[in-house]
Image 1 (cartoon, rainbow, N blue to C red):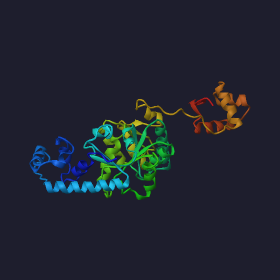
Image 2: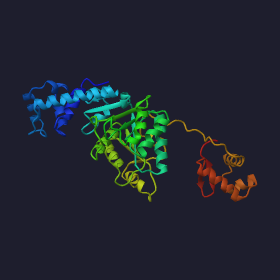
Image 3: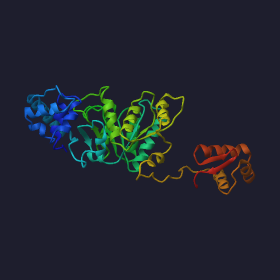
Image 4: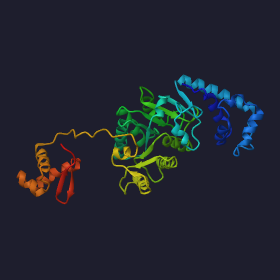
Length: 369
C-alpha cells in the first residue's frame, strides 16, 4: 500500500536541501502543502528555517521532483512494495522510529509492513564472525522470536545473516534494514534471504533510500540508526574495535534503548568491541533470559530437558548425586568404581551443562533429569 502522503514525502526528500529538509517537514502546515504551495509561501518556509536560509527552491524544481515522485511510485507499485511516511499516523509509521534523530521521511517496504509496528529486538555483529558467533546469533534470534519479538538486522555478511536465518528457521518474523534501495539488495548473494523475508509472512525488507540507490560508506551509518530506532534493544554478538555494530549500539544509547553484549575471549579481535561495551555498561548476556529480563512483558520459552539419552553409567551417577552423594569419594564407594572412571563421567556431564561444581569436590545436578 502506498501512503496517501507518499508523493509529498518522496518529493520533499528529493529537493536539493540536504539536512534542511527535516526543518521544512516541521514547518509544513500539512504534508501535501508542498504540492500546492506558492513561490512566496515556499520562500517564507525556507526563510523560517535557520538552516535553510539563503537556499532557494523554485516552483519548477518543485514540479520536477513531484514528477520524479510519481515515476517512483509507479515503480514501487510494479514491485508490489509499500511506502509509509513520517506524516502517517502511529497505525502505519512506527512511533518508536520517530524518537530517532532525523527519522526517515519515508520507508519503502517489501513484505509485511505491519511487522514494523511490533516489538523488535536488533541483533548485530561482525561481518567476519567466528563459528561460535554465528551459532550464538542464530540461536538467540530463534529464541527471541519464540518469545514474541521481531528480529531486526542489516542483511550484511556474518552475524546479520545468521540472525535473519535463525529467526526464519524458528518460524519468526524479521526485518532487514538495507543500506541500499529495496531493488538493489546488497550484498547480492543475500537476495534469496531477502526474498524469504519478504514472502510468506517472513517479515519485511525496508529502506529509506530511493529506488536504484547503491550502497555507499554514508548509507550504512544511516541504516544503523534505523536498526536501533525500530528496536527495544540491541544485542551485539561479536564486534571488533572499529565495528559498525558499535555505531548501532551508540545510536541505541542515544535513543534510550537497551544495549546487550555477549562476552568473548580477551585474545580474539572479534570480541574487543563487545567486551568494551560490557565494560562501559552494556548488559552481559549469557542466555536469552538475560535479554528478556530487561524487556517487560516477554518471557523465554520453557527450557527443554536434554534430548540426548544418558548412558547407564551416567544415569547411575546422576541418581547417586540426586540421592545426596555429591563427592567423588562417595560416588566411588556407592558405585564401586575407580576415581578416574567417575571423574571422566562427571567431566562429561559438566561439559554438557547437566551438572555444576559446588566446590572442589562437590557436584549438583542443574535440573531434574
